[in-house]
Length: 188
Image (cartoon, rainbow, N blue to C red):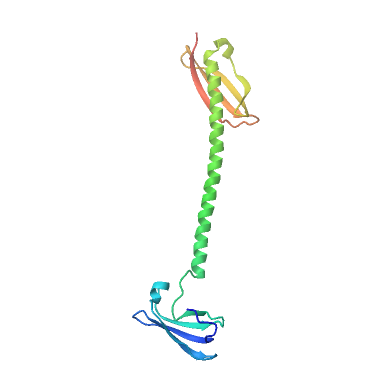
């Protein structure tokens, strides 16, 4: 509510009744007179609550009202702390998930590229003449902007007409096998 500048400065009680009329009554006056005004309308429509209010004139003609005896709306400090803790746990879980996803992607990429190198060496072993396959063979190859070391071994099987060719691929400079494949070939 706005009081003209020539109005009264002081303390006022703003009281709402059940019929929706809000009245302003002077509690104590420190000015030129006593203000007694009535305003039609429901306080409930404005703020969602009914009750008693105290209006205090700031001297510039504006009356600021404050609820008396009503519970303030909003979150308490404890509720905010619990909400922040839950939010923090969710963020940490999402960051952990993102990190795991990145690590898994790198491992899958390494295995796929090593598998391509192993399959290339197996196809080569299937098309080369058998005398060229005798014994163990080692080499290196570049694929996917990476260097790969591979080892190919040829072993006899229980059937004299078939040999077993194993290809193992490792990242360059490592003994860890990233991929491997086995090929069975007829001896002719």
